[in-house]
Image (tube, rainbow, N blue to C red):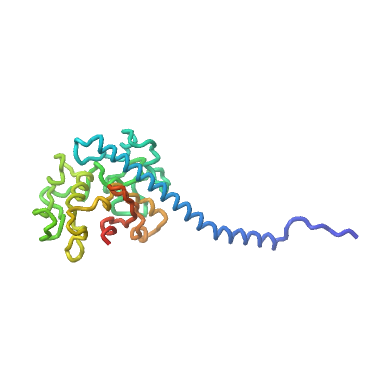
Length: 254
């Protein structure tokens, strides 16, 4: 009597194979996600380095104007300082730069109320030519750059609107505010005991002072954690890159 030959798999065999595949996916997926995230971070870091190189080339071309940067990062492409517009887009930004400088989970500097958002650009330009909301106080007010009786700050510790408004127009731009903050410092430069955290240095060290920030690395985080973790990538004026929380000042002095 001829035996019947069995073709295909039994249901149990199929379920075993599916279970094994599921286990393998569970093991490999986190690894692949980690590799992809590292790759995206490296690409973003490369973008920021190229942007800084372009900004420094701009400074050379306009050296006669003193402290200066272009009003927007998008000008870097228009002015020929960047080879490709895609350098303005962080790999984590799935909107391709159309959502501006912030991820929906983030707050603080990346918030649209600061008015720094640029179409087609993922990055937050600290030296933007746009109006700086936290400096455009009533002209009778002032901005504290140091604690009382601190010998490292100027004799007048309250910077006036006119001192920030270096070009004499009716607003203080982010660029104007940041050049003052870089040179003279502010209350962030002092510890709880009132002592300067960088010794006798007056103003912020350029190596820790961001010129460009990327908030899109927050995209993997949700809820309150997104605003507390050090996942904001910063490009300093002196080529250094570092991660910080939303308040970079607080991160670099700890």
